[in-house]
Image (tube, rainbow, N blue to C red; front, side, top):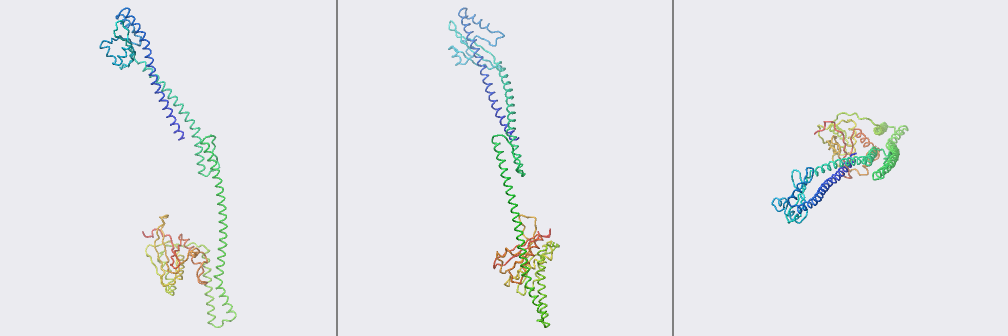
Length: 483
């Protein structure tokens, strides 16, 4: 409707402007026609009266001629006639020099005498017997012109208002029917398309640009509906393929788990079986050998127990029992637990971090397990006498999450580093680069799952022969993060 009102207003302004200009020109033209009619009346009366006055002068003298002029004025006459002596100063002062010369040459002279009510004055020269220069002055007020102009203006205003109103109403009606209604239908169609309704067509029977636009919108909706159906089918196909891929991945994971369990448990089982047979057959008879075999069986059983427990920890989800914990203290505890093992390799463990304010809500035993795994891997990877460092600090805030406060624990070693190919499989279960029997390949997988349960993440930065940095990110506990 806004466009219809604008079009109606513009059309109305154009129509009213044209009609007003035509009315103005008509009023001016009518005024000129009125004055021309008055001039023609003066000419006819002037020529007739001048002939009669001239004949009376010739037959009876100047006095009779002037008497004829005076008797030609009556109260009912609109034209007043007056004798003008062109030889007297009074007579010559009524006309300009140029008009006076034209009058003496026998031509009629018309002029407008300005007054409270303007008057049209016509001068007609007289033919006198003794060549006396005289003229008749015919004057008529233009009050009739004013009344005629007022009637013309009133009539023109009424006609202008009527025509303008009819044109405005017609423009509004046609605009509403031919522009407003189709545009509302197109607008409603666009809104339906925006809400996802692509099936309801817009019906416009006009054979113009708006009708073509409606047809194009219907075609567009059909194309969008077809594309949406194709997209939905593609999404369904993709989901189906993804589900199949996940199923295949689960089967592959089960296969890797089975192979890993068989590999990890195979060696200790063979050792236990061998020593059991030796004890049963009496191959081992001395007390010292029996005790040695039993200790070997116990160690291998403990190893199998550890493997099975790690496997259960990996496969079984256990919700962490979170408490407010000082991460610096946990790091020092993990370092103390592994200090003896590190000393055998000539490696020193050091913990860096502010002991005040670095608190997180975590399961202490699970985070201690993570740090122990990371420290043990770093010690195993270190071949030089360089120290292994644990650094606890506040993490830099993520620009996309300005309100999230995180703490970070960096485990830094100067070992042989990790290649990019190995990093891709680092957190997969039973993946290990250690020798057979040296590791189960579950430590990092279990650690990764624990940190994810705490709402954090583990990152790895490393390069071959450049050392490694394992970074554990954990959410800080409320106001416990220093400003």
